[in-house]
Length: 523
Image (cartoon, rainbow, N blue to C red; front, side, top):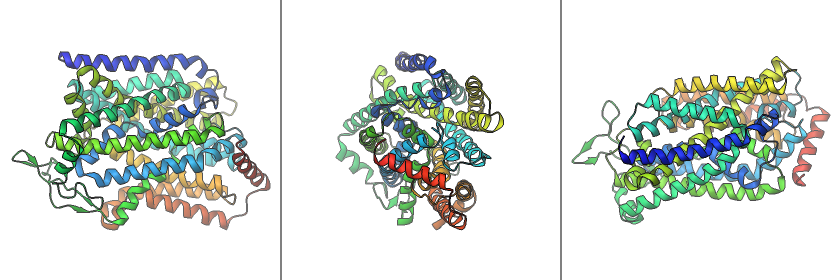
């Protein structure tokens, strides 16, 4: 490595040292009880709740995946995804946050999502709890893999070392940090990481636009590419047989613009539906200290989200203007943020900006690993297998499971041609369709039944796999994002099965009314 690379590495190491210090600071409190370790004792303030929710949600795909999509095929896919996510963020904080915070306390003071569903329907055999925990393990393993891919791409691009070794090194750091600090450390550092992420995005966008000669110059340049700036069209890179974009006379080659119809727009906007089912955000709602502070949190989260997503999309367009032939595959295109940073900024400042990618990755992967581990340790191990397990035993089991999930995630991430956006899209659809409909109906429809909840959850998860693997490849109207059909199927199944069954018991209805009244009164 040369001198500039060493300076970049030093800046990143200083940042990582700060993150580890936060984990060590909260380690003693986290180990006092499972509630502290998994939910932070419901003590999050409005700023930390909002910023940690968004940082844990966005992950490395915000700085690499989304700009990569915009760089590769233009504005439509990236912009409609960003709009859907921004609207979904606002609606989730507006509709779900207060009701879930109140209901999770009323329903046995639940501290995990599976535990809330189980307590909500007062099940005795813990079937719904077990199914919820299993799906969380499955989809968060894929999510963790996407974060490890980000680590591998970041460090291998910066330091010229092998992707696999850098991916493993990044994963080991994340694992160590998560094991030590738990939820409070995760949430506190996520606040810092959210600040780093938005500053990094704004800095790279501003520097890149200035280097390109202004925003007008960027837009004029990419407008020459067929479909690149069309909201109802999409650019089509001309590829060789091995998926590499062709270059002629120093210019990347594009074919005629592809169609991007209303159905495709709706399916892309459906990314926003995923928010109703992603545990890393829902847990922040459960952990906030006062429901009266949720309005402030909603405003903070929405503003952060809109600014960050807008910057990410524009970075992709700016990168295509400045470095049109630097990244010639869909996978390599996700490195455009790194290319801009290392070429336009001084080494130390580039290291700080690179820490933004690391921040996004850490803030998400620690959430994913912690929630997945708690799903097994708290819900399956203590909830089903060994009901008399002590808090200490649950904490140890959670750490063992965390290591196992990480190992599987690293195996998935070994392929250096993995596309971060694709991995995140699948896991996001899985959570959105599996937990989104049942979360909404559980909170707002008193007629929802236990059997309806189970049927809806299973149908949503299965639909994601079937649509992605068997139906989507058919193309045409079937080529839409799997979250939209799977979400609708799950919602319909919940309503139909619930109406065919008996009305919920009186104590369940009374608890529903209490949670609703508490939410209205900010209790």
